Length: 340
Image (tube, rainbow, N blue to C red):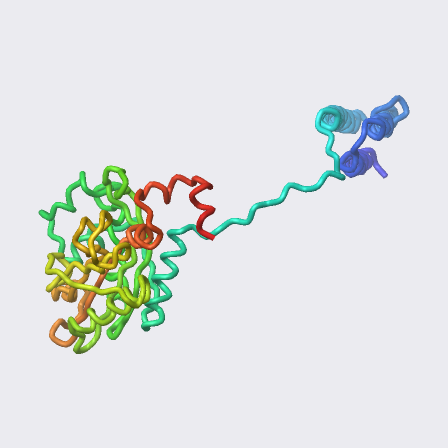
């Protein structure tokens, strides 16, 4: 075996041994074996006298490289071993002590309520659709019949990322994506996070969750919307819950309505929660505006539909009797552990 091949073999052998070294004595044995006066690397260096001048240069240079490499590696491993020994001295573990029990986690109240909402609508034949949280103006505004001069298009009222993209202010953007990629009939709900630069207080947050719904088909009328929402409200808040609809305005629905339920605290008698009138506003709804159908290429003369949307935090606050929305986001274990 020539000297260069011998050096390569020594290098591989050293690497294998040093990788398995875990104590100082073993490390010293390795040092002596490879770098000692009678070590393998020293032996190769002593044998180069019989080589040609060119071979002496090559073998000598490679041997010195390995010598430095071995020394550095041995120093590195020694430091690691020393650190472990010090740690063992200062932090001894009594393996006979009983373990620290791990407290099981619980589902976040927002997740619980959103799942309940989803389950109710799934039982009514709806499917779940999801879409991007970073959206273009077309999907967040234009296709939903929200013109450029609408207040929500103002840069101060929307989180713009640049001149083209923004954080969606509602999950209505998913309605447009769904209708662009699917022909009627369709029944979908769209849960997810939305963003609005509201001042944070007991009832407002810059980020919150929505569940919106959409049904499109032939001969879909307002009574269909009313029936779906009444079924949802009774399933969510109890069979005795009453609902009412008040005229309202939304650019993407016409006619539009605000939907109220009889106060779940006072059962409609009047209390502090419902401001004494016996009703609680929970969501907005209406028949899909024909201009929205026009934006997605639907025939508004053939198809009709309805849409609705609700804030999940609003529903959760009513169900659990919570008066401050900020509690949902503060990660206070004393609050969260109540929702088992």
